[in-house]
Image 1: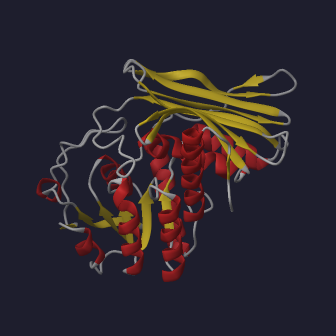
Image 2: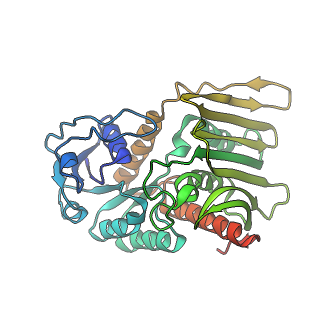
Length: 349
């Protein structure tokens, strides 16, 4: 049995906690929170943009620590699940690794490429497993895209366009502080940067144009420049000032013998496909894969099942590994640099 300690009980900490309850071979044995109500199981104040609202939790035999240091000293914890605010990820992850624990850290791994590299290096130095919670590839549309591309049936990749935009989350504290959350580049677009890195590898350079909000990118479009002239990869992301469209995301991925497309949006309070997942083939056929009910909670189940399997097997994950997560942060950082300077920025490896 893998014993988990969750560091930080907010929305994502609660989602992870609820998901672990559905899995076998892994269980939560401890939590840490500075909030005495949360340590006592009163999670009614927690609310997110999907999943169930917070409620009174019967924590049973789970040990509730006040500090992460106490959690790291708990000998009944094998894996530390870090769901703290992003600016605390690096220090918490390194401390957990150095205490002999494996680490599963929510995205983004850190807020800059240098500290991400330090966390990855700490995992290698301490011979511990580092996994990062990039759950997007486990959502049904992205899992379908991954399996289709990896299967090779439709030939090589020719490119793709990725879109992810939200309304300005005015209710979130510190969202536009680069040193605390990092704005939409590191909170939002990092999902697509990670997926683009997984599908296409690292580009040679990035060219980004858009608007800034203080030190954070606000709204932008990026061309990811690859040595292969036939490979065209772009992304558009950021925020809008109107609250009537709180979320939209999607992609169009082109292969030699097929195009994969989908777009989902929340308009007002209604979430719906604007383009249901669709496969276009050269014979003129248009097909729609059966991806189930689209419940986002299932993606977290698949993700944490992979976490459990990796820890049990003593190996990292191709999709959740720290190196890939670090590359995603590098891409985000370079896009902001390109946006600020107005020039193409080279990716140094």
